[in-house]
Image (cartoon, rainbow, N blue to C red):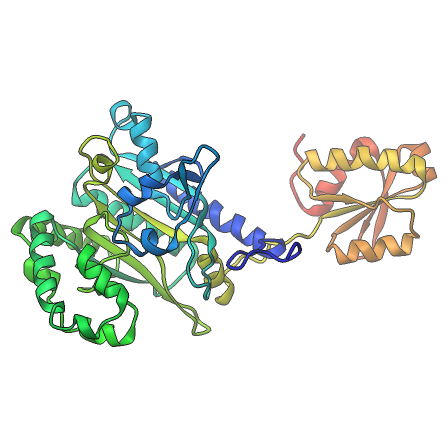
Length: 429
């Protein structure tokens, strides 16, 4: 057990770690173009935050949270999602009173859910997302959807399917819930135990059931659109009007409710099937909420956000060969010292190269020159720098192009200029 990772977790190393860094960098850059700033809430929160924020009727709270009592007997939970923690951060630090609204942030980090591991999904996984809080217009909903769509487009994902729906305002949802209860009451004896619980806690959750037999029953359920108030209809129509104006493709899905109880009005998901045929389902999702901040103890403020699973994005990009070729662990320059005196000079040379922006490694072992070249080849190095006794005494190095096998001597003071020219890069002091 000591040498095995916990079920549902995985080690991110090598090519995958580089891929994660690339994806997160793209996501951060796009968010900053939209004037969102980074926040980093703690990985642990008081359990009550998620029970009140995410919703007692959600599968996350009922079945998936990692919860424990700390040494002071306080109930603590490893975050199963970010939004509730972001709201707590906003309320505790009074950020809605001290910032221009909407208050717009992005986040990235691990979340924890005890669920069945499957394609691109783990019990500890990384989430990237945004929240825009303090504005209750359809325009901010559309900005957040546009931001998410821009991210996926910037990752070169084509044919992303956006499913969108509205859960309406309080008046709409209350009427719809009563209609659902009346409908499902006639079928409940044939449905799964989870649907029995959802029926009592929040009948909207039944629409999200994944049991095939229950899905057939759901097909005949009343539709949200038939219970929308005039205000909710107008708001959703405005969202769709703006998406059309921005030429963002979407499909209205009457059964889309999302898995968290705090959502209201606009909800959406981003679906993707890779070129290899892997159906990843929702690679990202989000929606509008209007009571979450107040439920946690803050002012009456609405918000909207989305999140992506970084593991799922990586799997999709890997499947479709969309990760850039230059994401690798290859070194550019491999320094080869021959003898103890050369080792000291090698450290100085490597330090200067690294500070000048070249990915550089050193051979630390006393091995033959031929073995050093083999190591340089395995590391993918473009150039080798050889330092022997003569080079130490003359304060020179030998630079060898490992592709052309050409080599030349170079004075130390001209090393960076020479290697920059050899690399085809503009020299900058």
